[in-house]
Length: 149
Image 1 (cartoon, rainbow, N blue to C red):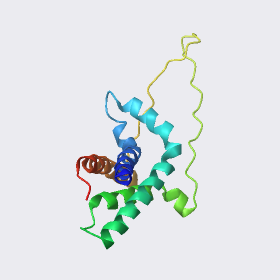
Image 2 (image 1 turned 90 degrees about the horizontal axis):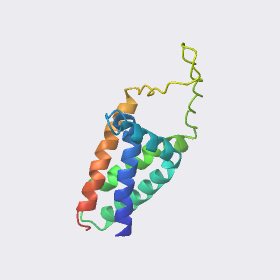
Image 3 (image 1 turned 135 degrees about the horizontal axis):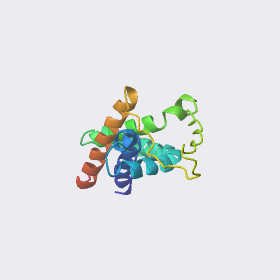
């Protein structure tokens, strides 16, 4: 039962990490979600490892003892691979370039105006991973509400 909870929570947390690029475009919660995702991103490999191990465990258990292979473990394995991709391939993730300092206002005051940073629209693989992240969150919640077999 604990392994099933770990798989479900890893699906939810990993899905939120993958979907952060898309979810931070939401009007009222996007800024906070983006901030939380940036704070949790260095620890995403732990969520990926838990998802990969628990998904693999349940895949082996259900492939050998039955009743059948469920989509929960397949999504967990995919989340684990997606979050651990740079570590599995031996590449380091691209570092964020340092932001340039904010320019002083033209009217001569020393106060720096705070502006909301522009949020880029995810395209290509980033969009595909973000949509898969939303699906993983739904599957994780479904796993919490489904009885264990």
